[in-house]
Image (spheres, rainbow, N blue to C red):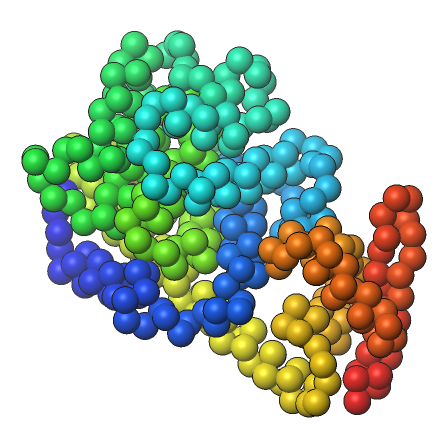
Length: 354
């Protein structure tokens, strides 16, 4: 891999921003971190699934994850699986990677989404898998024979665990994209390679201390530039596995994702400050302020205790108290829908707040 000036510049900038050493300490207010984390994990799960063909809207997908309801179709199952996988990698960031752990991750990612359940959490056992251009039918990539997959995945894990440092140094961010590429190149599974590759990309960056990546959805940027993503893979393979192309593409995607995160947080902080001005001397906590913002902007008008619990990472009782207090103040009304209690906008929110 070459290291042109542009790559070194971007690696330096991301080093300064993704690890929290200089500028990111105040980027996300401490009281908001859990909410932003849950939201970003959901966004990444949705975008990574859409890259692999999941057909649903972001709004419906997020509603499913926030309400903790069961998936209704194949696309929703993919998204629910990816969300479980993003949580899994955060919890296993300090665990050395093994082929068995890669298989476990793949099982989480692909549960109930493959033609055969025998393929979930299993390396492929034939050479029928090829990467094909769906528009032209052209074979873009023929992976190594399945007979070498176990050996290659053993080497992959040694590389991921930094057990090959005696050979050469590779910058951690560049290395995370190399791991991403290698899963696509080896193609160890019958299906679900892309989702697994992107999950391991996150796992390595989080493991190396780039904590801000947890709050970013790089797959959402890739989704916007799928053709460039595919070409980065192709150019790398065609040029004797020169990773320069693939690393530069991913560095750009990370940079754009970081910029999107900054804009999102600035917008949310501005909305919160506007709301706080409106709620002067009123006793609402941060979670209730978010709910009031959504009600005022007519972005949402129905809530459940489970949704608030999952979305803000609080206990069931805290979520229940938040909603019941808004009922007491005439902001929401509660009603039963089957066994679930729903909390609905009581209307005239702005007038009541004023």
